[in-house]
Amino acid sequence: MRYESKLRIYLALLAAAVTAAIILMPPPASSHLPELSRFGNNLTSNHWNFSSFSVQWNLNPATGSNVQGGNSAASIIEAAFNTWVSAPNANLPVTRGSDSSVSSESSSPANINLVCFVCMDADFSKDSSTLAVTITTSVSRGNGDGHGGTAGFDGQIIKSDILFNPNVQYTTNGTGSGSTQDLQTVATHEIGHFLGMDHTGVVRAVMFPFAPVSEHILSYDDDAGISTLYPKSTPDVPTGNITGTVRMFGSNTPVFGAHVYAGSTTSALPFPTSFNLRKSPISTLTKPDGTYTIQGVPPDSYIITAEPLDGPESAGDVSGYARAFGPAIQTNFTTRWH
Ligand SMILES: [Zn+2]
Image (cartoon, rainbow, N blue to C red; front, side, top):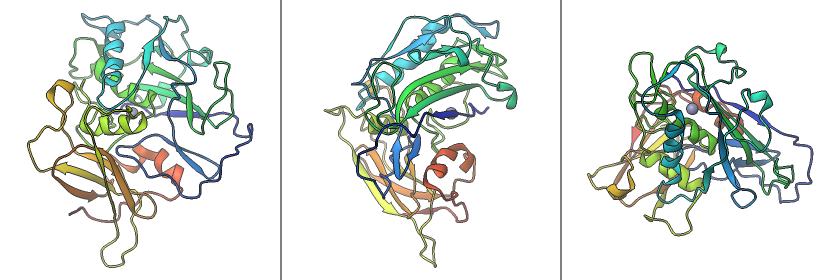
């Protein structure tokens, strides 16, 4: 089942003199995919600024009869946030704030990051298989940050609300079945969006756009993405980058939006088991000039594979990526290894 159609709101792009030099070349697409947005010629990876205000999430503890199971919804949301906060190599000082009684997204104040089970105004009726939606607000530098200050960079996330579809059956018992979804699995995925992550093409990752029956543990791909967005000053496990270019065989023209992944050829666990990560390939998409940089790759031996994004994940699952760059993602080629 598909997670959600994400919404995104960009505030007042006209305000605030953007004094930084115009960046003509986009930054490298990072391992896994961050949510990208374009402010003028500046392509940014949306993320929070933990030095501007303390980032907290606020639970409306009310749930409907669609949420069942032996654990409280609050404990599940807490566990799901903790999965990201405790991720190795990442610095994520996100904490639980006071609970909220806000019961609609439209009335959620600027300084509340709402987690809501009873909000009905996200128009879930558009897609009956949508499990939840995360609505993130990011702004350009100099705009108000909703906490009395101003954004320090383009693409600073200033608010994010997670709304669970009240029409979907959820269990808090840890494993979904049939049409019942596991709440912690969905929450962990949505919190990835809350933090600025986009979907990945790595099937075993939390940020893959389709929900498995149970997945509470981050993959190497998820961890590479989050630690690239929010790097710890002293990493728990040193990592490196893999770079290259994908071109069409014969014509040599660069391929945009090829899914490139580094798959380990060994059984080594460069992240010790104490970190509670699942080993997985680590991936990215190529930029319009065909180049890619897979960041956050731990020491190991890898095979690099380039494949078209033509299912199970498709270009529509990372539509923000193509929109940020301009051209449509190419899928008119076949899978290649090197
Ligand atoms: Zn998603």
